[in-house]
Image 1 (cartoon, rainbow, N blue to C red):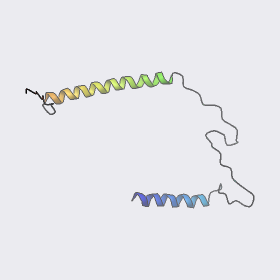
Image 2: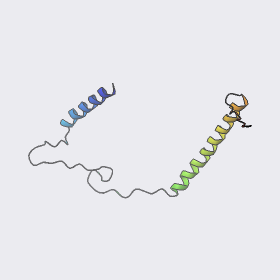
Image 3: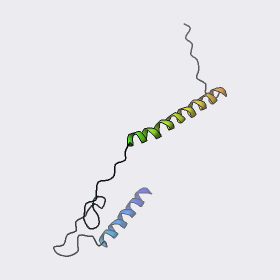
Image 4: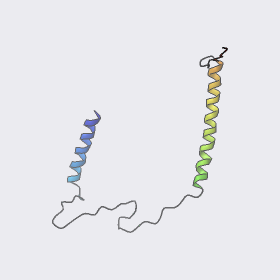
Length: 97
């Protein structure tokens, strides 16, 4: 099923590429240069450098640390609940040889 969907998408893309105004067959001596719109504008000028986010690593730590702490609290409380109801209790293996 997935391969059929992939083939259908590929055929759709090939059909659209032929009718695209940017196709390479626009006449003798005409070539199309593909430009990255993430770096340049539609007129071809170079965009300014992206703005850097100050304290990026600090902001990441500010989000990650509390969620890790809450996750450990939830897992610790759930493990205590399981042990209290004898659902999952590790066996004590005493080797008295």
